[in-house]
Image 1 (cartoon, helix red, strand yellow):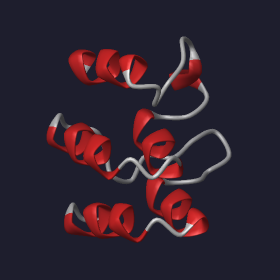
Image 2 (cartoon, rainbow, N blue to C red):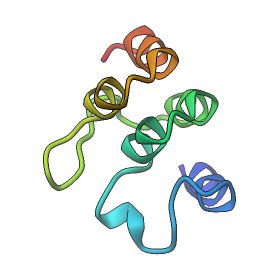
Image 3 (cartoon, rainbow, N blue to C red):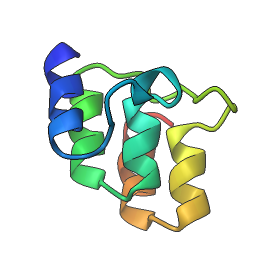
Image 4 (cartoon, helix red, strand yellow):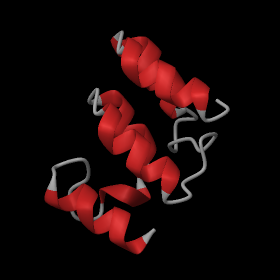
Length: 78
């Protein structure tokens, strides 16, 4: 997970300190980054995690209309 977190920072999924407010999975889903979602899920991130407002990655992807992200999340049990 540490490597995945570093990759998230490198590729703009998370900025420094943002993970406390919004898990990497939710951030990637809200940005439409399905490849990053796949990487995070393979690295063991919880598909059901939510940000501090209760929004899950699936909810974020659906709200933004990112169909490919929705498919990735559903394939991983969301």
